[in-house]
Image (cartoon, rainbow, N blue to C red; front, side, top):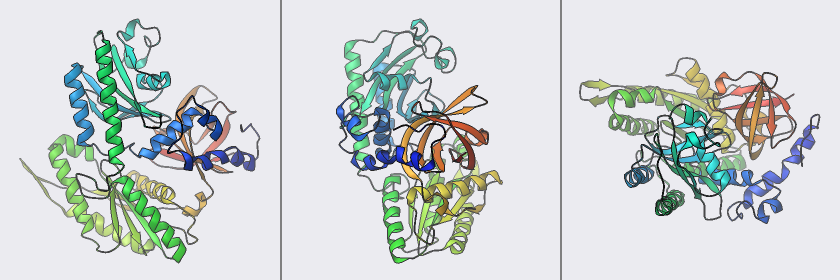
Length: 442
């Protein structure tokens, strides 16, 4: 079903009803190109995004298992660049990388996106002479890719999450044997992704892994709603952490991460849970705690993190943190995604206000309760159609949409949203975080 311009809010919800129902059937969904996608009423890209979400790996901290695969791949092929690239609806994000600066790029020009769209290993011996890529900005500009070889990361149920790729700034040949080795290494990446689904603890800090934290948090949310008890969530982000790593070294950065988790844990002893959500981002779940008390806990955590001192060769340093606080609504109508999004909005405000502070979510979380989870590739049309910005649509309701997009803070308040070739839907931004927007349909 397609939503056309002028469609009612109810029609918009109906158009996405099959998305919500089929998300529960994704574990053994057949690969794209089979009858499975049509039976579920979903596109191949929707199924692929659902599989990527199931692995819950985007924006997670670096892990030695994946770094080791990248190091091995670089030694085997002797290329200047290697990445484990995961492809979201709007970006490619590197779980591990060698010789590549940014952690993520836009999806549009990514050769890894072309690889998964092709559905098989992509070998480009000289991108400058290949008409498909000669004008690609990653070829004509940084990182000046000339040679590329990528093997899709294919899950046991046939979905392509991204690629293991090798790149160089000089042309080169690539033999059939080398192609098979790259495919085998890509299979090892998938094996590691399968193994991390079983891990409950973050290897560096001892905090819960993001997957385990989300699972425990959802269980606690359901229990709180059933018992009509309060529940709060705090999201913590260490300020200017890249600067810490660049100035003092990654080993000292790791020490600051561990010390911050220990300082946080020392503030309570009970049913509270700490999880590591990303590189320097953590979350604390507070059962039976309302907003006022949660803010008090957040202030204690902030002071404790700021009070830790870390030694390095030339002296000592400290770190500070920004914290976003939110609480479940009284009627219990929320889930972990809503709580995290609400806390992220508050965290964004804390950073914008100067960092090293705590901010409580300004708007009631219940306002988003009607949003239904979807996973779709889309684009924001800006400036009367003069510019298009890719996005990933995460949730939709009769009147609202929630999406992830690069550079969310710089985007205008109004735009048109396009999904799956449908007519543009005029939208107005309601709230922002660093990585996403919630907007109202107009």
